[in-house]
Amino acid sequence: MRRAHSSLLTALPLIGALLAAPASQAADPVVHIGYIPVLGAAPAYIISQEGWDKQAGFELKLTQFDSGPNMILGLASGTLEAYMGGIGPLMVAGSQGITVKVVASTAVEELVVAGGPELSAEAAKGGTKAEAISRLAAKLGRPVKIATQPVGSIPDTVLKYWLQEDEHVDPTKVQIVPMGIDATQQALLAGAVDAATVREPALTIIQDRLPTVKVLAYGKDMIKDQPGTVLGVTGALAKDHPELVQKLVELVDKAVTLIAQDPARAAADVEKVLGRGIVDVKTMQRALTSPASQFVVDPRRIVEKTKILQDFQVKTGVLKKAEPLDTLFDASYYEKLHK
Image (cartoon, rainbow, N blue to C red; front, side, top):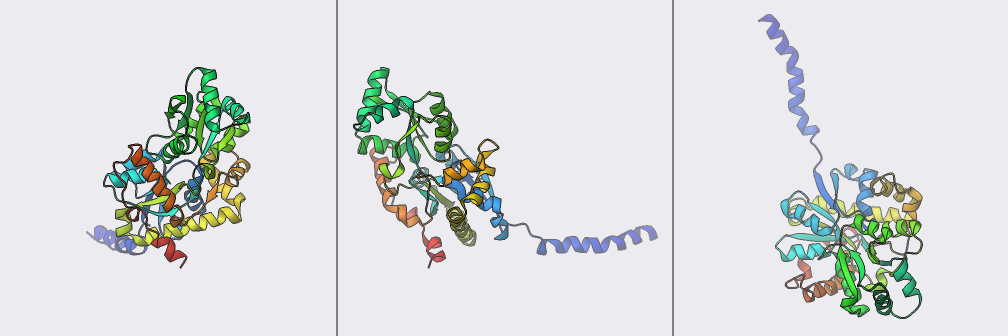
């Protein structure tokens, strides 16, 4: 009994410490964010690598997806609270009753149409892009194959808008091939497709490896201020933890400032997430400062062009109807930051 009594007395201070621990050592809240592996999502990589999330009292846990539509499943199931990708899938999600708010932009005009060697050569001869596509289709004896992301994604929507509304390309002359981002890059390099919609850093990587790949249209050539990557949060996160959403918007703004003021440091952060030991920091820095990289945080800047794309998605049957954009956008966090 004495030995047991002595052991109990020895254990009491430890038990007391354990009971008191939660009050002072509570775990930081976690925000699970899905992202597309493109430079438009650079703010998420920078926040994580710089440790700014931990300094702000929460953890930003990153999960990579190959397309925006696939991320919507994570938002719908509750495994994701935040989203960093194209706005197109969020418009589709809203029409399906999934509550998501776009609280910040991260990039605009990031999408480009890159032509493979043969299509680029045809385009260099002059004339319209529609004429170049028609000439190549006649030469190949088949439609020109253009790779892009799945139906409903921003790359798919912007590509179709450019082909139909801007260039008035004969639909029988093109075949749109949906695939993931990495597969798109590999398909263009391998010559499996004749053109592709790409974003940085894929554009810089592709042109380094195959200089005969040329840009047929930059983002501003297709739709000026076209919405690129955005930060979206679930309605539940916005309702239950608005302070976390505010911190996240503030850190995205801070990351975009870092990209502008110290691209070398930003590139080092991005390389650790996107480079994966394959792409070096200098290449990543060139991608960050290329004409295809335009970082913008203010969500109000993309509302007008989002409406154009939304109407086009209704026209092409991707959306049944156009939902009011004021239910999709919430600029209050950005406005509070820059009041």
